[in-house]
Length: 241
Image (cartoon, rainbow, N blue to C red; front, side, top):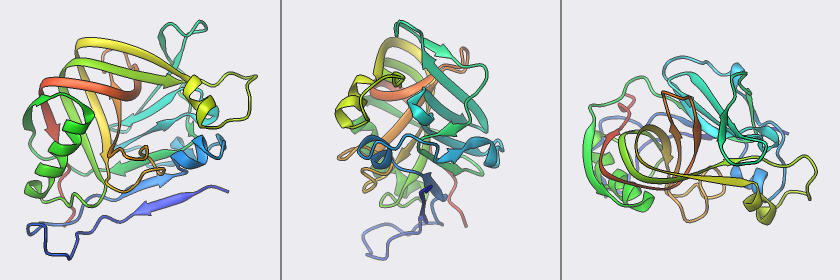
């Protein structure tokens, strides 16, 4: 059975947030990280070509059977796997359209960029999003899609690829299916989802961000594990009125 989880992102009534100008864009998660990693169900939970692939659609997740990473950026599908000897990422020109789990959001418009400096980790980035989101009319207690552009100082990222003959899937096996790459001083684009309480859905437990990189020149994409920037451009979505 496919799992469809909708997060309707209205704002809190606790009175601890500034007056918000609207609602966060709707974030949809089909399947879940827990279903794939802990329960070992790697079958397709989302068929991308059944989504409305408009220029406003953004999303990310692993391919079904964990055969690579898939990113939707502005309605365009990017799919990366790894070479036979696992030494380099490989662009899939015939895009895989099924994902083991997939989180996505339709963003009608992005607000003017905010320049953020001295981001040393994904924790720093999550803190910045939580700090600035209310100023941009968004509720940080609810999921937020975001984009980042800029020259990344250092980055460590991975691509999943499960071997055809391997033990039944579990968290320990999952770790062995990650093939890591490191880069420095690269201009890259990023799409991500911020959430404070979706551990096991589309963020790891204890994490507030799930983010993919996109190299717009090569088409390579992957899951970001660590990154730092001297300066970045952070983009928030326009709230829904």
